[in-house]
Image 1 (cartoon, rainbow, N blue to C red):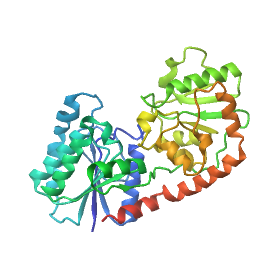
Image 2: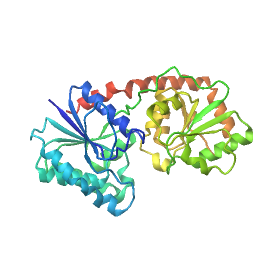
Image 3: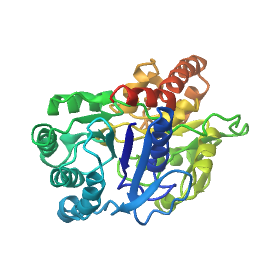
Image 4: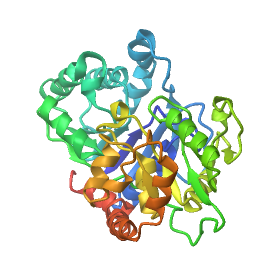
Length: 367
C-alpha cells in the first residue's frame, strides 16, 4: 500500500494562512485514494483532531538572514534522518510530500536522504518563482540534479500556477506539474451579502505586496464620495488610517475558518490589489476561494489573478486602483449583468477543477 508522508515546517496553527486547510485537503485526497498518510509537523503546534500528527520538527523561521536561510534549517536534519531511515527501501511504497519549503530545508532533506540511504519518491510543492530568490534558482537546480543523479531519487515538482510551471520547467529542465488549489470547504452556503450597503473584504494580514496603500486610497475616496460602501479588514491595519475609521470593520487577526468563510460569503466584492512584482506568477488561494464562492474579485494588472481572469474575458475585474473615479468604477462593475454571467461560468469551472476529487485524481496519476 502507498504511504504518504507529509513534511510541514511552515504549519503554525489552524488560523494562520492556508497551511492547515491545505494539509487537510492532502489528507482527504490520500484517503480518497486509499493511501496511508502520516503528517510530520513542528513540536509547538497545538492541533488535536482525528488525523495522524507526529510533532517532531523545528518550525520555520521567518527572520530573513543568512543564519535562518541556511543554518537554522539544519536543526531538522535528525528528525528528517529518522523519518527516512524508518522506510523500507521500497521506492514505490513511500512518498514524501514537502509543502512550501526554503532552500535551506531542501538542502537538509538532501543530506538526510543521503546519510539514511533510503529510497522513496519525493514530491515538492513549489509556491514561489525561483528566479526571484537567492542565486536566481541555481541552488534549486543543483539540488534537483543531485537528487536525480547522485541519490537516484525521483523528484516530482508541483506548482499551482501555469506561469510558475513555465518558469520551473525552463530553468530546471524537469517536468513540472500543476495541482489545483482545493482548500474551498465552507464557501458554498446560502449566506447573502447585506442589502443596504456594498460589503467589501480585504482578506489576510498586513504584508508586503498585499496592496494596503490602495485600500487606504479607496477608503479615502469612499469617504469623499459618501458612498455606501464598507470594508472588512484585519485589525492590524487600524493604525494605518490617518483619518476617520468610518466605513471600516476591523476583523480578528487570528480568525478561524468558519469566520473567514462567512466574511467571504457575506461580501459583495473581494479586494485583491496585489503587487504585480510579488504576484506576477505565484497564485492566490484567496482568489480561488472567492471565485469558488461566486464573488466579484477586483485585482491588479500583470498578476496571476489577472492571467486567470483573462481566460474568461473578465477584463473589467482587472481594476485601476489609482483612478479618480475608483468608487464609481466599482459600483458600475457590481451592477454589470454581462460581467456576472462570465463570472458564473468561471465559478462553475473553478468548482470542478479546484476540488478534492480532482486534486486526488491528479496525485494518483503520479504514483
